[in-house]
Amino acid sequence: MPEMSTDNQALPPAPITEPGNYVIDLTGPGSHTLVRKAGVGSLSIGPKELKQPAELLVAADERMNWSVFEPFATPAGSPWPRYLRYTGGDTGFLEWAEQRPIEEMSWTPVLPEAAELDASRADIYGLNITMSLQSGGLLRMKLPEKLYRLSLSGDLTRFSASGHLPDYLALVPDTSRRKSDAPYQLPDLGMLREVTTLALNSPPLGQPVSLAGLEQFPNLESLSLWGSFCDLDALARLTGLTSLELRFMPELDGLPSLEAWPLLDQFIAFNVEEAGGKRLRQQMKARAKVRPWDKYASVSQLRKLEWWVSEYGRPFSAWPKRLAKLANEAYDAAEAAMAEARNLEEAEAAITAFTLRFNSLKGVETSEREDLGEAVWQLSQSEHQIGQPITEELAQGWFDAARDY
Image (cartoon, rainbow, N blue to C red; front, side, top):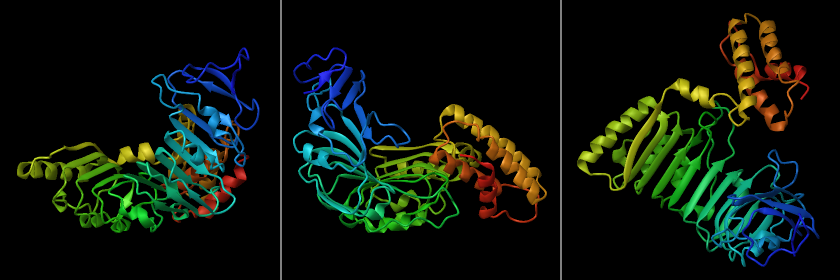
């Protein structure tokens, strides 16, 4: 039974609703101290190698006693934590969830090989699965019968579902940062093709996702798009849509007229490119004169190209604010120097100076190094007066020669 870490007195009878420090037997007797804070309903578990440290550090291959959380509850009496984030290979939470409901489970599998799991009896309302490079092989899962929302991120080709069809499916495929890369094609999603509600996300200025792949969803009634897409004309074939949401989309070329969806009752366009947004406003008003919108219709936050570049054009958006400011200042200086470069030597000097700015910066890990490498590529493609293109290999060589991170 867990104990209070402050005075080693036995825990009060369940449910435990108060904040405090509790010693729990997660991977062995007294193995971890759970710090519960007031008003926080989430808990993260994972290995120490994570970029954002988990609250409870557990090696990816360690097994856990998930039942140690059963005494804990919210002040309203529902199970706590409400939201669990776990990176690792212990699938015991599925069996645990047969006895204790999980409101939201975010799982990044770390498995040595392919796995087949029966989660049909697990009481999970929302399940988020991220198939990362460490996820192992193909993950086949019989979905929980009580599952409402399923979210899949990363390499979508390595997940296969059977059993219960979720009411809501969200897809966040692993795309590149390069807008110039060939469009991402959605894989065959098997039984998930039968869902009626779908959300599809991608970075606004990254590799576009082809919407031609939506033909595999014949029953779609509600569609939400967020980010960069191409083949928007394919949406005209989704004639059964009653709800369509477009968010943070810098390009609307090829988007069908709203008349393409005769059953549409709800339409939202938020943070979209200016010219396309103006057309949508006109169409929305014209449609309202013929048939009023039963639910909701809005087109707002129309954005010029400059806004997209400043908000999403550089790879520092996920950095802490202070570090992002330093990175953007260094980028501005390098971009100005590149604009004046008349030969490869001057271009190399600009990129080298940019790279050296981060040699003394603490906390440059793998993800930040990749961000800086992407920034170097962007700089190499910016305007200059050299008279010949700068290859990615050449710019990367300058970057590697100057960095010590």
